[in-house]
Image (cartoon, rainbow, N blue to C red):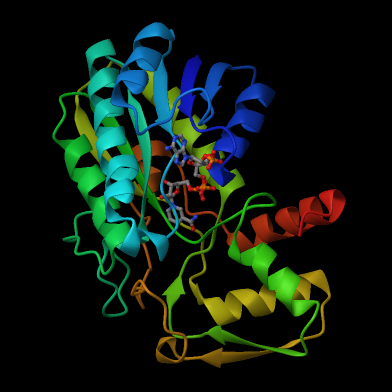
Length: 292
Ligand SMILES: NC(=O)c1ccc[n+]([C@@H]2O[C@H](COP(=O)([O-])OP(=O)(O)OC[C@H]3O[C@@H](n4cnc5c(N)ncnc54)[C@H](OP(=O)(O)O)[C@@H]3O)[C@@H](O)[C@H]2O)c1
């Protein structure tokens, strides 16, 4: 299987490269220097010129607060770019795999969001990702849109690394305790994407968009997640759970980010990954690389 991956250095992109290499797939991963996804012609040329059986988009504008003031840039990267990728992949008749977010949902209530629930983003990052979903769905190709949440890994910027850093130099931390979601390891996301790409490659090409939810279980609050991180890392620190209202941010955050992944097994034989197992592996890697 030959893969064309947009993104090389991000949390998920790095894991895709490592795992694609380990699996012996032929793949090309494009960094920002290779293709700036703000350049639609460069995207089209990359898809036209690279032989591939699937296109995976691991690029995104992921600065949730920054997206409030950089709305146009977020729209280009999170909506226009994947639209062009989906169109070019459709022309080539190869599946297009894209990653979206829990932030497309409003975040009210306490029930897990189903793939068919109406989307209603609470912030501009979510709006740009939701527009991307809508654009992709409007194309004539085979598209898989994976919504995930609270991504962590041993590289890049993420909650696990931030908690480790601040926990080492403080006796107590205030962490939001009323936003609930599923922490998800970039390792697990990459593994699921490669698995799905292979399944799509092995079956007859059929147009249509499949949305899936792939998020870690069990659902927890950020404060509970932080407690588990410091406990596993052996750091003595008290974690106080605070309400979202005590931690104002430019972009509103959904309180309920629970994603229902029950459709994964019948569709792709996958299940929601246990983030506690992935966290052990992530902490080991951080320790080995001293990348916290
Ligand atoms: N992070 C989360 O908590 C979270 C939660 C839910 C969903 N998601 C979704 O999961 C996916 C992967 O997220 P991630 O955490 O792996 O993101 P990430 O670590 O922020 O990586 C984003 C990647 O996009 C690349 N990129 C950004 N702008 C670009 C441009 N103009 N041209 C080319 N490349 C560009 C970055 O390249 P540079 O390294 O050169 O900047 C980087 O490789 C995204 O679709 C995101 O929306 C993430």
